[in-house]
Length: 194
Ligand SMILES: Nc1nc2c(ncn2[C@@H]2O[C@H](COP(=O)(O)OP(=O)(O)OP(=O)(O)O)[C@@H](O)[C@H]2O)c(=O)[nH]1
Ligand SMILES: [Mg+2]
Image (tube, rainbow, N blue to C red; front, side, top):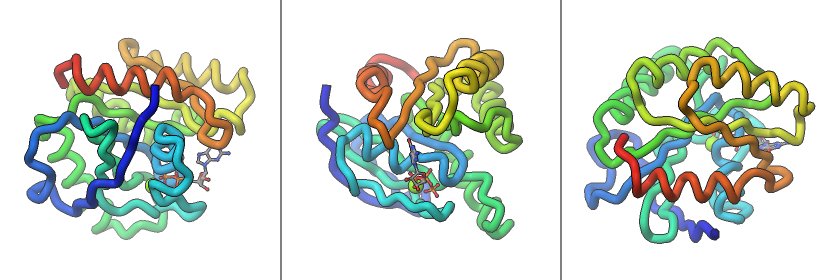
């Protein structure tokens, strides 16, 4: 299956989000975890979403229209040490409103670096989604940089927190893990309640 993707628009506030009611799947994760790279890999495009080696590249909610049927939303990363505290608070406020209120939101993909289990900011986010009973799936990124043993351990730890969630192991650098993920995202957009 292909994801035909086009950049739709960037939004800095919840009030201005699209109103036509298409389903949405959001991607979140620490700064630099590989959210924008994942969007490029899903779409098999090199520069659709802007990526950067410097954390904090994505600062708005960026909407990508997939197959003219649903949106994938690239969110700003969290856990970025150099970010001002006021910005962090603002991000949390916007994100919380979006996750709790947005009716179009069908699932949230939480991206975690394959190599780094149990980071404090990831644990907080994982638990927040579990406690708020928001449908989510987990994506291990940068699998090309991790050993199989590390990946297995990490997968096990994640399933202790989210026993129901699907876990995908991916590498954007090596285009690994995306056909399953595309299929899952398409199904999540159309056959589930958030
Ligand atoms: N080796 C490897 N590097 C990756 C992979 N995915 C992303 N990267 C690198 O990680 C860095 C960050 O990637 P981004 O996709 O910009 O990360 P992001 O999560 O969108 O970051 P913010 O927008 O700052 O929140 C870039 O240098 C990417 O090239 C991967 O699968 N393997
Ligand atoms: Mg980004």
